Length: 570
Image (cartoon, rainbow, N blue to C red; front, side, top):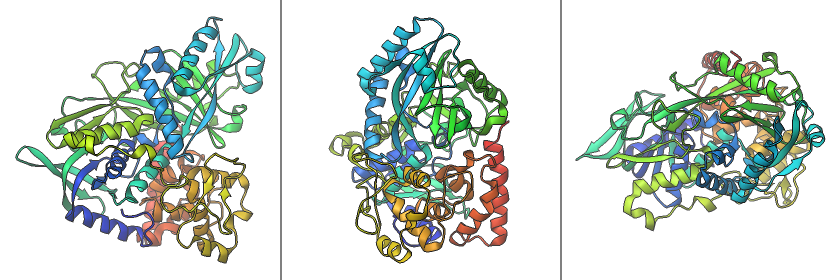
């Protein structure tokens, strides 16, 4: 792909990007389009390096779109005495809230205290320590106050609750924003392109052979260094299995269920529940709750995993231990599963395995990245690029800590003004929250011709749009006004049809799954997983992707089948 502001169609953009891969030599080539991979791409471009990325499927298609949607230090790591990991993660939380305020924000979380009265000082001390490391200090609620804040809490044995704040994110959209920020700085990123093997010269890696997933053609990408960020798909059966090095991957399966927000009455924020060996979260997500996660060794397929029935039952049982509100399978809207690529010794415990990342260089010119926390992706990426640069790293330091991501105020071309010249802000936003939305070339003129498209939209819908697009919200609305795409896409979700066209034309999406599962997140937000609107989505993007009506029908049917398998209730 090329510059996100390019006015040409997505297929032309992709063709030119592939031509660059064929003909240019890069300082760094990244293989893998998850958060670590796109983070390394942006990190390299922030240092002025020529950088490129290839991804065999879509950006964030694996673990990076199937997380708990949290940017946090990790409370349970305190019990494991991993203070440095917690401190680093909390520092990164602050950085991400600064460079991507539309995608990462703080929410209050309530920790109910049931059972022994000793839990109050024990957990209180832990949360105070969490605050001292940078999380902000907790407050105590009496049992009565805890029930008023979370009416669904089980009252028997309730000793009170502690409230702290932690970060919530849109993981898949963060991946896309990081990648687009790199592309806007002249990086190259191409999806549907599978690395098949390393190219070596005199014992050093000098590039990668790649197969174009759309045409089947093979080409070679030349690079001074290759970063293997394939995550859970690395190792045996991965593109560089013969160069696996000393770092092994211990897969851990984490699953989540999605519920209607109204099903579990609560005030603001979410819930953190202590269960043996780990914690379970009830995370606010618009009009939904996300509940999870599990943490078990996994030896199944890592591509598009599904939630096992026993893991769903485990989460339901965990909720029943804390809530008086009975939650059953009938309440579940959707499920999703992700495989954590833990860097650890096979046979060990996934619960106690370190979430710290490991960088290895099994052969000159190749850097592998395994493990790590989503929250610390930026640090992981910097370490990987440092390893790729070797002695040159000190002279070319990472600059991503102060680089706003696409959609943040001041990022890229966003001008920060609306059609009449005044700041357009997220509904209900106050001063100093980074909620201004910007405009791109021609936006003011298009809005002036169409009138203000935001005027007739539900404020809650505008808030949801801002939470996805930030400073680009005005441009999304302008596109909708120009194309007649301001109508709701699905009656049970806060999306407009313009987002579909935007995903393909500006966010590197090439298929229905890319759009509905990772750009809009509609797939796990509604019970039909988007099946009822898939035909309409295919019709909107069909001309841009070169799909005739027959191809649109094929793509629609394939999406309906795959989304039901991946996100359904087992």
